[in-house]
Image (cartoon, rainbow, N blue to C red; front, side, top):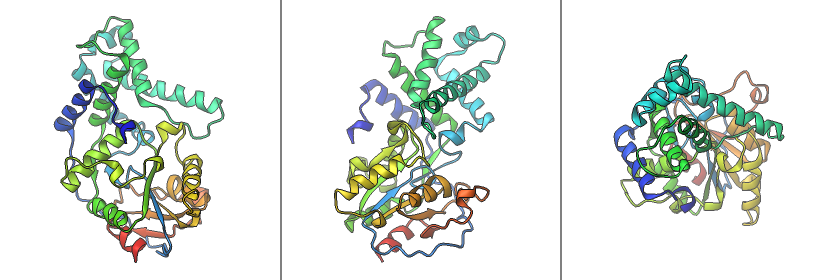
Length: 325
């Protein structure tokens, strides 16, 4: 899926360098969530669509929305980013009255909020940002007070570097045990697979890296498992789950292949963003409760109060067992 990996060679080399320095690909010990409901009646499934964060791989904070709420981690990631790119001088010029770490992460949150407000004004209920555009504005702020990158490159390429490093400093990603085997088993059985997920440009890069490590194949590509037109990320769509748009688009694509919505299974770890959103569009649902720290039950959310998924798994390999049984 070349659309996710089309970066200048120097930028791509930097991503790989950051992965080598900061990534922890091995999953820490995880404990399944205590969830006892779900019928596990999943006969007749012809297509499986996956969430990413908390489902295909774990993150120790969560997606962009969740990570924006953890102030101390934002502060530390900001400090690491300032040191990595020598930003202290220009950030101090931009706001001499605040610590530079505070200025950077507060500016980051401010720009995200402004983007959300513009989208809501345009009628988008669940807006999404394009994170490299957020960082592009920060790069431009710094350039206005004289900052020059250590190499000649387009502003957007500098933004990609800052965004990638900041996220890698903010949180770690790790593949849940058995995910690559579950994906391969479904693929061998002829099940069409795709992704509908809240995400940013670095999400498919992280996913490919983790699956390559998990499967011990350095040449593994996403299209070996996932159908390209069914990989639907929020940063490309312009809105985030639980917006129904990605689910409706996937249903339309699969209907042209003769697959009805009741033959589509959506798998995710969040009762609102995943189970409610997909079932509300007529899909069948599976709650991925492998990791209690990232299983989001939304017990105080009215839309989820009486909601039950069609199944629950507490180990990744149970997915293939249920679908293929």
